[in-house]
Image (cartoon, rainbow, N blue to C red; front, top):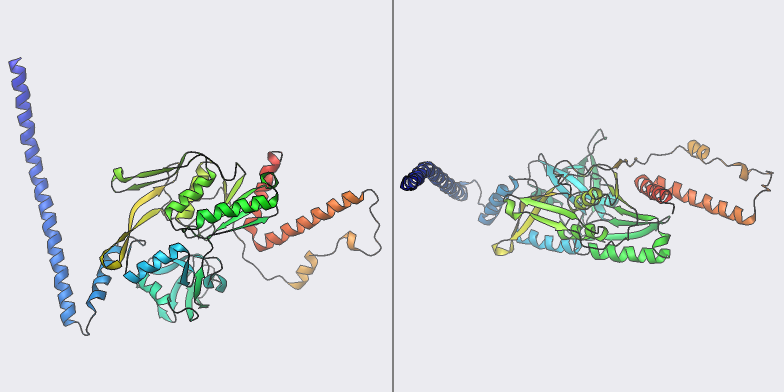
Length: 442
């Protein structure tokens, strides 16, 4: 027994010696790292002083420091940035849904300003700005090499003033100018309407109003239709929705899910990860759903589309989404400024990250570009039928009620054709809902 105890003690002592031998170099490395950091901070202070005292023109010291902070943050990724007190105030206003500007969400890609999406009904949308456009000049001045915040500042201006942006667009041989009149942007987070017998919920942004607008809009449309049994399904239109608040994306997803995970976030420390689960209750009471997405659907939009797709709650239709799978935390700083810092990646219920990949639709459907139709071609396409020919024979096998039903079917078919011309993707989504109902015998 004594020998066993001695051996145990010897083993313990040996492990202490080994641990000490390993720890010493590690402590030395940490100390060296700290020294290097302090040396670099001293270098920064030296450079700052030399610029302040020797630059060819007098500089604004606070602007110099702001630029240094922003440069440090933007070197991390395109979504981390410093918000000056004015920018921080603007951001708080935007999440409430009303602000001045053009109405576009932008990001930076390899030094260029890229349009994530124009917002519905805004000056940029009405002027023809499209998701995926690259903005190269603002009022003739190049934005290449500027930080995203600086480029956005160039686009700001008084309501009612004109701005000319130069755009490079895929499929266009040359850059071209778009003139936009700045205006007050009033975002309606959700617009609800009924197309044929499907409720269409057009979600333009995820701000403080989104879930409340969606819930009231859906209930109103179902009530106007005469109840749930009169509705074929729901189209959740997330096209060109650049995202917004994470908690609103979770609420919208939860509205249509009864149980299960909605989204999880994983940061640098595994212990900081969070999971968000659905609560009981489906706002749509099991009605079939189609989610529409495209290249302008980003961030919060992708959370919703990914959650409903993974749970097989909805069929996702359209084109691949933007692919922003990171979470930004806005941290207040002294002096009323703020820091937007990427703190986590988010993952759909199946565990997939969509960072830089996007959500792939279940059914790929592109929106065809509107083309001018030749008058002769249009006349041929709408050529009259037998029923419109002078002197034609009447159909003697149908009753008045049957004729009325045929006329109603014809009217509905014409409406479908008009919608397909106006919005092919939406018409396709509604056709899917109709097919699902037919399969279910409804």
